[in-house]
Image (cartoon, rainbow, N blue to C red):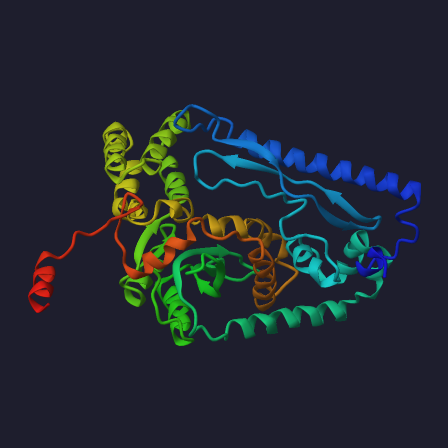
Length: 424
């Protein structure tokens, strides 16, 4: 079977026809130019942000591996650029034109969730897919699409009832994604938990409907996980300032440490400071969470409070109230700091979903939204990289003490040693 046939495409002579080859090259150029324009917008957004050495914090850093995108002309190879964030705040470039989860699809279903987030209704799906798949899309009737949507919902419900008795998660990231549909209450949101297991693998742990990230909603999510066998509480939970999650955490997992997201906190603090000095203030905040030791971070924290407290008390109070939770990461392995200082694992994965749900208001119901978000999250999960320094996770679980990111070797118990000598 030819590659085009296996992909569901019917493009006779696609490899040998010089005109088709020329058109594919043109399509590749257009796609790459559009993606390059997206990248330039991101770089301009962070053009004034520098690291502690004065260098630009966000710079381009080569390309991701080349991959193919299906078009009516056949597979078109494209390269998506990537960026490097020297500040460690987790800035990444995700193209909206060629999102991470749109790959070389061999099934029509693989493109459907993405099209829904683009605002394509069931009735228009066949026409939209014709652009991607050519004549092969003609069999995709509204009835077929409806059955696929029902299957998404069934897959989600089955996943949401899975047994968790053999699972253990060391860290979890929490966030809420607001997505009102068809005139629904705008306080409805999707509650998301991503966890990392002892092998350093990130997994979608929970995806539930909630009400304004309330304590009751988050408590229901955690208690459901416990009811399905998740007995061990995570060592650390990372999230923004949503009070509902932290209140639920205190009740359901009281022994779990709290780490507030530095990206969210920075944005909240800067909102209380005039734009003319936000760059300087942001550099001051970076000095805190980029410090090598907790003592240095405490000093930088005090400098910020002293420098901005008189003129901008709201900004300083926003920072001070979460001081302990903002610096909790110093008590965990330094190799993990990049992962646990922010809720980036959720932000980067659900960025497209967060920005596209407004386009789906007339396309999907609440249950369908859960199903398609679940499908996209599972696709994204395949590309999540393992936690740096994952071999240290068992030490975290065992309760090994870390100071400034380094494991502390506890002195021997002198009384215990004497007792052992006498017994011998």
